[in-house]
Structure formats: structure tokens, C-alpha cells
Image (cartoon, rainbow, N blue to C red; front, side):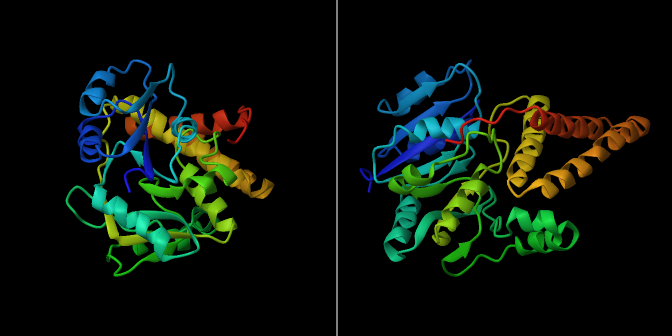
Length: 296
């Protein structure tokens, strides 16, 4: 198994969770792209595993584009995409691989996600396009459905949490990995869409689990909020813009109320909400003036 799977990471100011996980996976070939141009992690990483293929970039190019750089180096039949806020061990990776042997129509396998307190975080089975088209009704049902009964067997979903995901290298060479136009967020949803368009299944299996820790990177909270909120809004608009003009128009219409919310919260002296809506507005403006890149 170890010779058949490469683990790829994209990191940015990663903390203890990342280092704990690479210690657990010492027997696998690992490719790490570090999006932090000021990173000093290389010595610590090499001390744990000197065989790691580590690249530090001279600027933060985003999750999707960095992941594609890592994928270009993959030579094994399968690869596992991991993020710095998740922990998974060899046994659970092996069970992800078994899914490809168990079913003929698998395009991607994913573990169930447990929180740091070992509670099931729920699956991401409600597709974002459904939440967007029927926000008031469907969204409530979606989040209720995340509650939380751990399935007893393998199940097919529309999309999954971003990582860990196990993929066949030959498939991704055919359809491309993440769309470079996503900085972060929705790149996983877009990938699942393209896999399902081929008639393949996205399988989540309770025979494999990972621990998902939120906020495990060492990023300034204000800067982190700016990157997170503005990138989410940009990616949301970019993702839904593929569905035609009326969806773009609806998003822009919803975005107009950010101006109102900013001024309302200035009046209410709610500093947190003022900045939240400014960051959302920045995401919208970024999309309006964005020059689309090659997808892969």
C-alpha cells in the first residue's frame, strides 16, 4: 500500500496537528507545498521525514493552485489529498483504498469526519446548488441532515469535505484536479461535480475516519477572517457563475445588501459585522474585476 499512494499537502503557517499527522504517516511518500513565503518549517519537516518532497512558494497562490503543483509530481497509482487541520492514520487510509477494490464505479473515497471530541461532524451530502436555489427551505433541511447519526455502511454523496480524499491518479490526469481559479473553498465541490458527470460515485465510508480540527494554523485572526470570508464569497460567485447569467445576477443582487449592512452596523457599533460585510463585499469586487486563469 505504501508504494501505491502518495500523500500531498498544501500548508500555510501550519501548527502541531500537521506535524503530528506526518509523524503518523512516515511510511508514505509525501509531497508538501508550503504557501507561506516566510516559512521556516523545512528543517522541522525534514527532521521528521527527510524523504519529503517539500517546496516553499514565494507567495501564497491559494489552496487549489498549490494542490495542482503537488499533483503534477505524483507518480503512484493513487494519491491522498490532505490538509493541515486533519489527522488520519495508515489503517484508515488502507480502508479508503479498499473502497476502490470493492466498487467498480468509484471516483473518490472519503472517510467520515470526527471532531476533536470524537463526535461525528456529519456528511456534506446536500449539494450547494440546491441550497442556493431554495435557500430558506433546503438549507435548513441540509443542516438538519448533518446531524449526526453515523451511517452503518458505505454511502454515496454529492460532494465531500475537502480532505482527506483518495483519488486515482489516472482519473485526475484525465479530468484535472482543482480548478486554479478557486483560491480556497468550492474547489472540492467543483471536483466532485466533474467526477459525477462521468457517472462515477463519491463514496464516504464509516470504515475509515479522520479527526478534523478547526483553526489549527497559526494565522492572525483578523487576517484569517479577511482571507476566509472574502475567498468564500469570491469562490461562491465563481462556482455559481457556471450555471448562467441569472445565477450571477441573483448573487450580485444579494451582495447589494452588504452596503446596507455595513452602514447599519456602523450605526449599531457592531465592529465584527462591519468587517464581515466589508470582507464579503471585497470578495464580490474581486470577482467583478477578475481575469480568469487556465483551469488546470
